Structure formats: structure tokens, C-alpha cells
Amino acid sequence: MTLIAEYGTILLVLACLFGFFMAWGIGANDVANAMGTSVGSRALTIKQAIFVAIVFEFLGAYLAGGSVTQTIRSGILDASMISPDQMVLGMMAALLAAGTWLLIATTRGWPVSTTHSIIGAVIGFGAVGVSMEAVNWAGVIPIVSSWVISPLLSGTVAFMIFMSVHKLILDTDNPFANAKRYVPFYMFAVGFLVTLLTVTKGLKNVGLNLTNFESFGLAVLVGLLVTAIGIALLTRIKADPEADEKFHFASVEKVFAVLMIFTACAMAFAHGSNDVANAVGPLAAIVGALQSGGEMAEQSIVPGWVLLLGAAGIVVGLATYGYRVIATIGRNITELTPSRGFAAELATAATVVGASGIGLPVSTTHTLVGAVLGVGLARGIGALNLRVIGTIFSSWIITLPAGAGLAIVYFFIFSAIFG
Image (cartoon, rainbow, N blue to C red; front, side, top):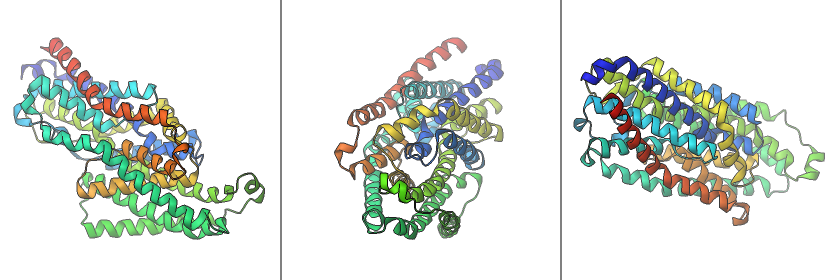
């Protein structure tokens, strides 16, 4: 208890800095999941994408980012075996370690999982800083298995959605007329699925505990609203015969570009509400321990200012460095058009919703990369940049041990400084 009593203010300031740094990393790396396909398909420019993401990521993170978060990230550590001093220094080390790895990955344009970064860091400090018994090793197995399950599931779903676009629209005699006919149904699916995603993964944290029936009803209403707005926008789009001569589906892709704006906004909100917890969860644990004078709690109430700090960090990260990973997701894996980008984003939302429903831990990053791969495969293996894909897969495997190794180093540095 002497550590918290002596250095409480310094530790709080450092924890806030590290929490902001981690949130910056989420913005710089993970937000590309919501925006990469929209930019790569040219439905939005990079500036428009950053503006949309700033607004909707911030709203998602601040309004739905959670009033209560688990102190011990995802039940990975046994709280009873950790002293308050270890908790504060360990969570600080975890935040700094995860933030450092995200910085390294972002400068290289690698889309990595922020969730796996912070979990790896927490495992590292728990195993070495406390004891091997403090880590729930059985909880690590689903995380590792999600490296395969997430991209496989979303890739399959994206492949099926894109093939349905081909069958209903692209491979017909009048693709433009069919696009106007069927795209409203896809719009409904976007509104419905992303509302379910937000309700199940985000809004439950702010005390909006809806029943399954109420959640379903709300999702249907939002889906209908999105469809109505979409139909109104689609009436303004006219066929462009001149552009169609250069690219047969130019007018059709204009219809899908409208759809991509909806998916970009919705995915940004859902992402902000879910992934801000990776930064504010450990920070809330530190704040809780410092403010209570060292009392440990299984759950920590997240103060409004902590959520605000996390939301601001995400926005700054996206605005300063987000373009690097956006380029990898949107342009370097396979060539995207609005119809392909839409299929990838809808598949991502569907996979995350489905996985949340059955309690399967999936990474948004892995899910979206898998979906982009699925869309690319629908056009044949030659449509994929296999070198970039190999680099991405390698960075996923490195993420957990990199986070753990950095956290161990930082934990011993902090222990030496404050010991």
C-alpha cells in the first residue's frame, strides 16, 4: 500500500498518458477495419473517411463504450493472487506494451488485433510479474483459435454475399436496374446487423439492458429506417452510359457507393463502442485501485473522463497515422470496388454479431481481413496479393508474444523505479 500512498498522483498521470497512448494505437491501427474498405473501394476519400470515423468512433466510444468494465481483462488473470501495487504497475506496463506494439505495427502498415495486443501484455506481466498460476491458461486457447476461426468464418460469409451480388445484379442483363431493386435489401441487412452488433457489444455497457426480443425489434426498426433513407438517396442516382463504356459496372458501383457510406458510419460506431475497452479497461482498473487506496474490485466503474480520454485518443490516432493501415486493408490485399467493399463489411458485421451471440472471441481485425480475402477469392487466387497476406498473418502470430515480452520488460522497469 505504500506505493499507492507515496506515488498516487504520479502513477495516475502516467496511467492516463499510457491509456491515451494505447487509445492512439487503437485509432491508428484498428479503425482501419471500419474505414479501409470504404477508402479502398473509393466510396469515400481518405479525408471523408477520417471525418466519418472521427465522428462515429468518438460517439461509439463515449456514448456506448461502457460504464462497467472487467478489471482483469477477459478473465485472463486471477484477481485474488495480485496485490494492488502489482495491479497498478502491471496494468501500466500492459498499456504501454500494447501501445508500443501497435505503434510498431502501424508504422509498417500491419493490421493487428488491439484486443490480442492488450491480452498478450496482461498475460506477460501476470505470468512473470506475479506467477504462472495467476494466468488462466485455458482462457488463452479460444484467443489463439480465433486466429483461424475469425478469418475463415468471415471469408466464407463475404464470399457468399459477393456471389449473391453477382447472381442478383452483376451477371444480369440490366445490372443498374437490378442494383436499384436489390440494394435496399442489402441496406436493411446492414442496418439490422450493425444495430444488433452495437446493442449486444456496446449499449449493454451503459445500462441499456434490452431483452433479445427488444434488441431484435430495435434492429428491425433501424434496418427499415436505413432502407428508407437509402431509397431516397438512390432515386437521385442516374445511369451514366459514358462511364459504363469504360467500365461496364460504373453506374452499378455508384449505387453500392451510397451503401458503403452507411456501412462505414455503422461499423465505426460499433467499433468505437467495443474496442475502446482495450484502452479504458486497464486504465479504469488503475484509477479504481488508486482512488480506493488499494482496494481491489472484480469490476471497475469507468468514470466519464476516462471514456473521454479513450475516445479522444482513438480520434487523434486515426487522424495522425490511420492512413497507413487503411492503405493495407483497402488497397494492398486485393483491388476493391464499392460492391466488393460492401460484401466485406457486411460479412464482418455478420460474423462479429454471430460470434458475440455464441460467446466466441473474435478479433475485428482478423474478421475484416478474412472478409476482404473472401471477396478477393471470389475473383480467383490471382486477385490476391499473397506477399502482403503472408506479412499480415505473420504479424498476427507475433502480436501475443510481442505484447507479453514488452509488458515484462516495462513491468520490471516500473518495479525498479517505484520499488
